[in-house]
Image (tube, rainbow, N blue to C red; front, side, top):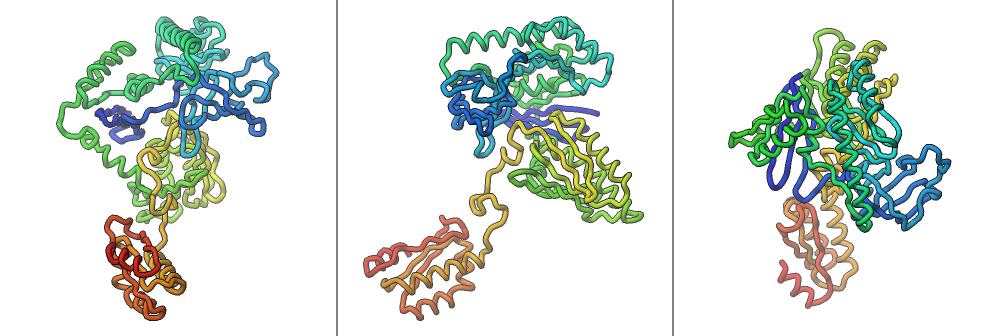
Amino acid sequence: MRKEIVIDMSEIEIRAALLEDGKAVEFFFERFNESCLAGNVYKGTVENVLPGIQSAFVNIGLDKNAFLFIGDVLLDEKSKVTKVEELFRPGEEIIVQVAKEPMGTKGARVTTKIALPGRYVVFMPGMDTVGVSHRIASTEERERLKRIVERIRPPRSGIIVRTAAEGRSAEEMKDDIETLHRLWSRILRKCEIIASPALLYEEASLVYALVRDLMNEEIESVWINSFFGYEKLRDFVGSIIPHLVDRVKYFESRENIFVHFGLEREIEQVLSRKVWLRSGGYLVFDRTEAMTVIDVNTGKFVGKKDLQETIFKTNLEAAEEIARQVRLRDIGGIILIDFIDMGKKEHRKHVVKALKESLARDRTRCTVIDMSELGLVEMTRKRVRKGLDSFLRESCPCCNGEGRVISLETVAVTLLRRIEEICAHTSSPVVGFTVGKELGEYLEKEGERVLGNIGKLYGKKVVWKIDGTLSPRKYTIAGVGGEEIREKIEKVM
């Protein structure tokens, strides 16, 4: 499989994409006025301890206090303490790391189980465990790496061997571990001299973290459109993976690099609710507060044989595309997939297997539950950052994020009813209101007669106008009461 990384670097925003066989599978964004918090280490102050939910809120200097659950607390193996109120007290200072970004109304989720990523390992101070990435397929290689790490790791230090360590020597592993151990020592020294709340360690910026985590022999090219960024990136790659430095390439064309690689179109499709499959079937993505629901439909695909074969092929194609879209959109949490009902048990097994195999390429941990008799598959995907939809879009101000708005006719009827109520109860001879363009055009066609009848019925003069500065379906009703108000209305009108 051919893999490439494409980086669009500017003063305003850094965008990057991971491509597999020419198709985008992951997007990454970093804006000049926003920074990624996941991975940052802070010295914080415990603000509240909540025994009822076995959690604490920690002030780490952000707008909202961070959430620390007891399950994310590093406990001494000999400790018998199991309650959060026995571990922390308000005002206590602790070192925490951001495990999940703030999302919506929720603050960041933090942990005291610190994990510092390097090129070949993840260093976990205070822990006493050794693990090896499951992506290293060879049992012999996994055992070799585990033996090396067991021999060279510092006391009271946990180590997770990363996929990039495959085939690396003991000396290379040792250098990586020693570098991270020195980093942890610097963090501890800084913690001793700085007041809480404070940032102790900041995770590498997008470009460097991306290359550190993804760059290996499978990556054929890393394209970047900034010459300054290109030179710095070559230096960085040369310091950690010197034999791959020539794979960093400067994109010299004046053409937008994302347009050149077809990524602008991919972003547009990622933001779409509906995704078409090659066969003519399609997927529909709907997000709720608790989960994301994906619906599979046959659409235009009618097949060449029987109905069951058509449904099976659509579901197989959908399984592969769902795995790609989940990565592209960076969907986290609970995901419910409604595949088209299949009558054959072996078909259901094949579809779930195809989904799992496609998700195996995802760097983020996924868990898939077998398909139910109704064709439903439940899965979870670890949520660390905001999904792409949340990053690139915000709730609609017209519908407040509901996804549907009150019809134009309903808005108009509500306004007319309100005007009639005012006319019935006011002593003012004039009632005035202002409307947005779309609502005004509707009233000109459908509402003039009703407004005229209201005025005659209550002996009032009803005056109104269209205001282009108002939202298209909004309206404002002027004050009422006597000749003074009439003059104000007439000035406005």
